[in-house]
View 1 (cartoon, helix red, strand yellow):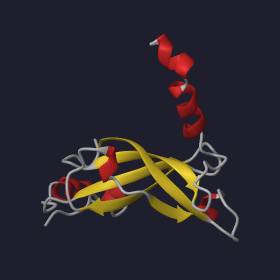
View 2 (cartoon, rainbow, N blue to C red):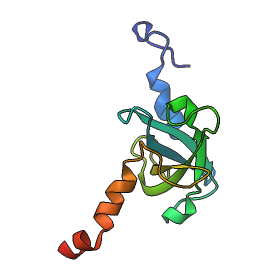
View 3 (cartoon, rainbow, N blue to C red):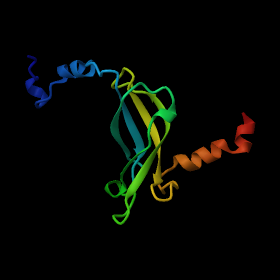
View 4 (spheres, rainbow, N blue to C red):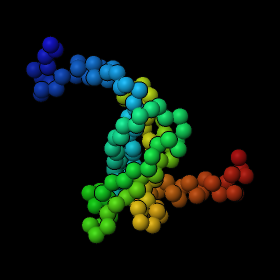
Length: 133
């Protein structure tokens, strides 16, 4: 049994590699990441998928309660997470991934105010910008 360093306030950092190396049985963890209500905070939550992701279309959209992140009022607070880009997760390793998301109003499917990816995407996909490449 590994004991925690008395100066580590109960944390046992020697155990982390053990848990990171556990067999995931072919499943992968997707860390959904988005910008929070202040526009400066990063939010995330994790979902387990049954198999390795090889295409963005394999990552299901998800949702969260926007009232907890100051992105919606309490009367209708469902915010939709739309995956737009994924990369390998350098922290969990293996086939686990980080997924950057746009945030949409779940009723209208329009970008919410703090969704800065939507206007950036529109700019970069504009014909004038694409033609410059």
